[in-house]
Image (cartoon, rainbow over all chains, first blue to last red; front, top):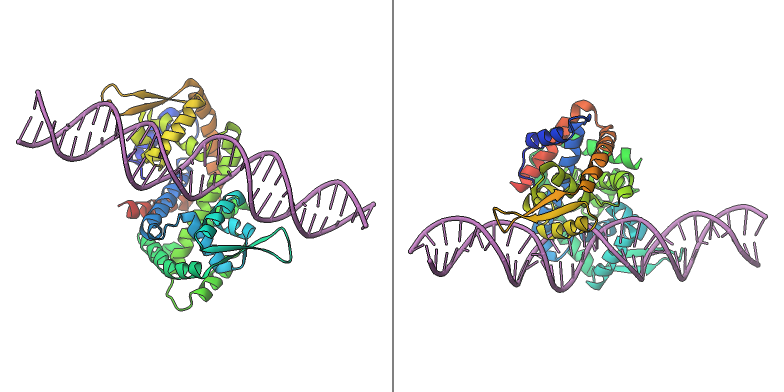
Length: 164
Length: 164
DNA sequence: TCGAGATTGTTTGGATACGAACAATATAGA
DNA sequence: TCTATATTGTTCGTATCCAAACAATCTCGA
């Protein structure tokens, strides 16, 4: 997951390759560590919380958004989950096949599909989410409590700048 | 990409769903924003830098690692890129098919496969990486310069805690 | 009323993603 | 030397993932 090379070693190599260019190593480090952290968090949660339920990260997020916003429109779910509508179609089909979620046509707008959880889906999320949050707490431990809000704010600022 | 609901609205909904549980909303916010940011950064770069070259994010990262560490061992590439060796096999096949990278057996250890860039791959990366770094700089803009190092450090600490 | 344009979910085709099983190679100890 | 064990990259099966094309539905103006 994490590369075996040190940051300094990598930077030296990059600088050597691109000695004639001006590079912002700090920006590089932010983006690089952003992805390492996201990947590590995802894999860790998939292994320790989701595996026993046979859920992928994406499937869990889709269930979670549906759980919170039920009945949820698919475009809303895709937006919150950060996946394309094409991907959501497949994930929803899988969740329906497993009896965790349900699709239904909107009576007000024939184009829309509304998603709800089945009782089995509700029960699964009720048991799963507390475990999920406990893992979140554990993973954020190395960041001093007084800086976690700031960390979230900076990440939010980056997202806002891009999606703005 | 980014959900249309505000943080407060989401938290209120979650609190309503889980009023009987103790939840750490700050840890939730960190993980949630970590993924929103990573997803936003990835999609933005794929659209604005990688699309014209027909590269996926993963394919680009594999090319980048190879470019820096050439000749690179596949286990090394997979580790740095944060993907499994099975995934790397497929990505390398795609890159070979497109004439951007090349596989060769190690003469010192018959189990190892060494990867190098083709001249076309070299040329592609020489033109692509500066654009990539300029996007990185732009995306990190909303974080005050004095706090970018701290941001990278916190992200690194989370990864280190998980990967132990 | 009616039709051009916009919006939505699905399908299609191809790439990515991973665990598990596998074959090839290397290494260590008897 | 020989063999049990470990390591590495590939294959296999299945689930994601997305852009583009598509069909169904809605909206709005003439």
